[in-house]
Length: 126
Image (cartoon, rainbow, N blue to C red; front, side, top):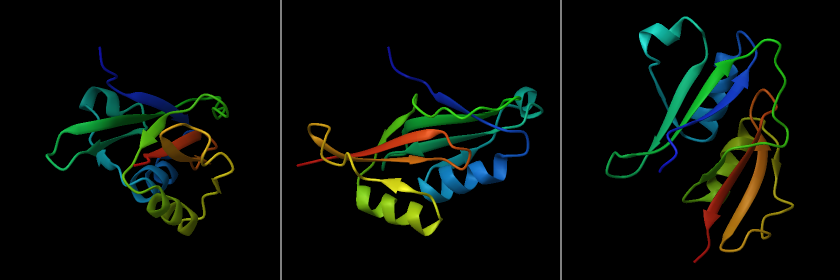
């Protein structure tokens, strides 16, 4: 078994804010939704490794009424945690590194996407 994708929610009209966080902040690539799903709104993102293989996929779906996920969260492993933290801060997103060294074998941070959904970002330690 392998995980295909994770979905988080946004309010109606929240796609541009989602793009700012997931594409600009985390560096994921937006991909087209299938035509029969595009009318629902939302947007999809993927991350790729150096060989072009998909390493992560995230779907942002429109949900009304919208309530952000403040505890449940996706966690993404990145190569350079500090680079991602700096990019997120530069875009105005809060970065919580209070638990940076609390996960064995990794350093990590917590943040929230543009709609208040919790997100964890980790990097392996050598």
